Length: 79
Image 1 (cartoon, one colour):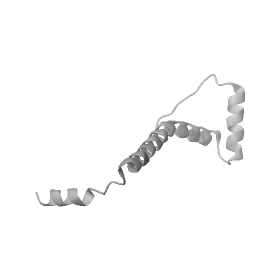
Image 2 (tube, rainbow, N blue to C red; image 1 turned 135 degrees about the vertical axis):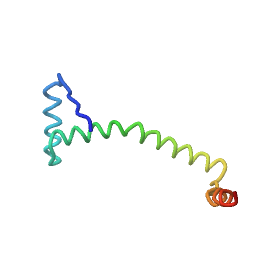
Image 3 (cartoon, rainbow, N blue to C red; image 1 turned 30 degrees about the vertical axis):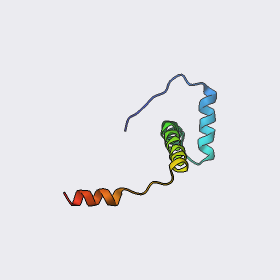
Image 4 (cartoon, rainbow, N blue to C red; image 1 turned 60 degrees about the vertical axis):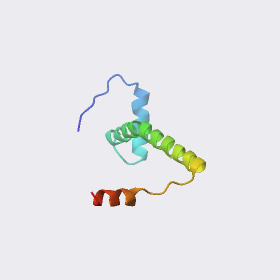
């Protein structure tokens, strides 16, 4: 894992995050890890949500597609 140092934060920011961490029964460091992880995951979750919405649109437009896995396995096994 990598260490990161953040300098020149406003005191109220640190105080707010420390209080938030205390309210959850964890250290400031653990709270900061959680905040950073959530922010890093946000774009991935947004992409997954858009993909899910698009899949629903396609299903509405064309119907639910059948699973092609058995067909692909059969083709692969016959080669």
